[in-house]
Length: 70
Image (cartoon, rainbow, N blue to C red; front, side, top):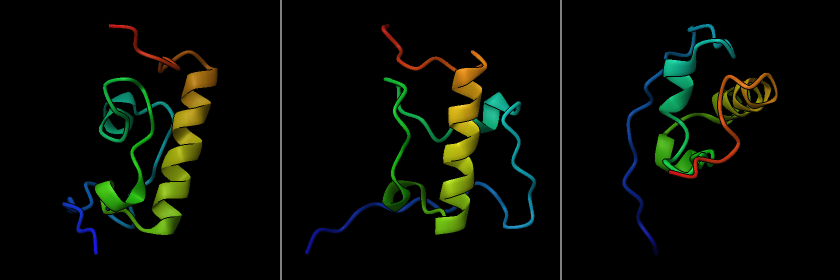
């Protein structure tokens, strides 16, 4: 069985997620700009879905890049 290094969730269950909070959203994307999977972030399913929606909305509004070419 594969074991993954789980991080403790960096957001609380009652914390309000917002697409304008770029510093928080950057914790959940890789250097290439991909969204981190739930197994590595340690989020619940509901939190992961909310984070994903916020990241996608921030990308559409050009607050986050779709890809980092650095």
